[in-house]
Image (cartoon, rainbow, N blue to C red; front, side):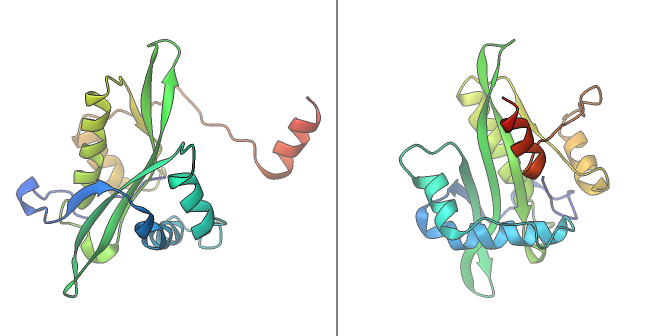
Length: 178
C-alpha cells in the first residue's frame, strides 16, 4: 500500500530531502516507518516484520526487495523521513521487467514538502533508465489525496483488474492440495 503527503501541490524546488538507496544502517528507521504506515492504513497490529528479517531481505545474499529512502532534517537532526519499498516484476506480454511499489510512506511531520513525489518520481526514473515499461502499485480506495496525486502524474487505475490474495490458512490449504 502507499501513502503520500497530505499537500501534493508543492514544487520540486520545495523538496529539501535527498533520495538514496537504503543502507543496512537504515533498517531500524525503515521498519519504524513500516509500522507508521500500518497505523495510517488502520492495521496497527499487522506488521510481523523484524529488523533481522528486513535486513536479510534487503541486504542478504540474494535481495529480491529494495528500498529507497529520503533524508531530511527533523528537529535539527538528519533522519530518514520517507521510504519507497519495491521489487521487480516481469511482464510476459512486454518481455521486460517492471517495478512494483509495495510501500510509499512519508512521516506526517514532513508531508507537504514533496518528499513522496520525489521518491515516486525517482523510481519512475529508475524504471526508465533500466528499460522497464511498467511501474505499478495499489492504493486504498479511501485514500483520496493519494489517488488524486497519482492521477496528477498521469497514473491510471487498473479498473478492469481485481487483486486476489492467498494467505494464512487459505494459502496453507491451497498448498496442501498441490
